[in-house]
Image (cartoon, rainbow, N blue to C red):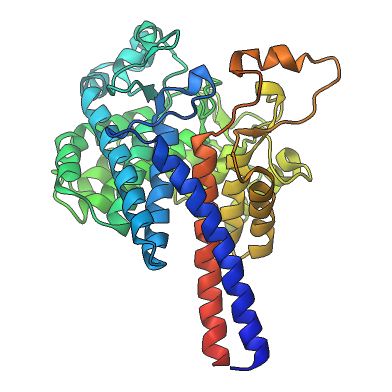
Length: 437
C-alpha cells in the first residue's frame, strides 16, 4: 500500500468514525426515551408534544432499525440489539393502536363523503395517543373532546401508512416476528379499504393545518402505505394478496394515489402540495418542504408524475423559496409557528436526499452544520431572530421559556442522514480500494 493510499484510508476511517459516534449518541438518546411498551413522546419539553405521535414514532423506529443494521455491520452488537429492541417495541405499540381503533377504521366504509360525520375523529385513526394506545388524556389535553368534532386537526392520513412503512423497513432489514404478522393479518383488509377511501378527501396537513385542503404529502404517504402492504403481503401470509391490494388502491380513482397526484397536483412541471376539494388543479404556489418525503421515502419519482424534471423542478423551487440560501428550510411560506423557525428534520431529510442522488458534498454540509451546532441536543427548529418588537419571553412561556429542545424526530433525522452518508462513503471507499490495491 503506498503512502497516499494509506493516508486516504486513515482519513476516511477517521471521518466515518466521527459520524458513527454522532449517530450512536442520537440513537442512544432515542432508545432511552422508549418505554417498555413502545410509547415515546415526541418531546417532553412542550405539552402538546408529550403524547405518542404515530408520525414521529414511526420515523424514530425507522431510524433505529437503520442504525441497528449499521451497528451490527460495524460490530457494535450491544447497540444494534438495543436499537432493534426499541424499534420493535414502537412498531408493536403502533400495531396495537391500529387494533384499538379498528372499529373507527371499519365504520368509515359505511359513511358517504357528503355526510359531515365522514370527517369526525370518531371514524378515523388519530394522529397521536396516550400511553395506553387510546386517545390522549393528560397534561390539560383531552383528545376525547375531538371525537365528535368534524375536521379535527387530529385527523391526518399518514398515521397508518407510516406504521406500515416502518413495519416494512423491519421486514427488509431483519424480518418480522410472528406477533407482528398476526396483528397485521387481523386488520390488513380493513386497513387497505380505509386507505383506499380517504386519499381523495381533505384532511389536516402534516403540520396539522389546512384541514379544508387535500395535500400531496398525505396522498403520497398512502401510496407508500399501499406499497409497504404489498411488499409485506408478498413475503408473509396476511390474508390479502397483492392483486387485491392493488384493486382496492385504484377503486376510488383509477391508477390510485400516484395517478391522483399526477392529475390534480402537478402544474407547469411542478408538484404542488395543496388542492381545494373539487378543484381540478393545485393551489397556486403551495410549496411545502414536507414534499421531500414524497421523493425520498414514499417511492414516487418525477417520472411517475409525468416527467423526471417534475422532481428536480419541485426540489429547486423549495430550495429557492424555503431554504433561500440558508442551511435549513422553513416549512412553507408564511409559516409563523414559533416565528417561523428553520426545521432541522427537514434540512436533514434534504441532506439524505442529496446523498442518495450522489450530491455528497451538498448533503454532508447540512449534516456537519447540524451536528456541529446542535450535537448535544437536537431541537425542533433553528430560531430565526425575530423583529425587535417581538416579546420572545412570553412567546416561549408555554414551552419552559425556550425553543422546543430534544425533538425525537430531529434525532431520528440525524441518524437517517448519517446512515445514508456512511453507506454512501463505504461503497465509494470500496470502489477506491478495489482500484488501488
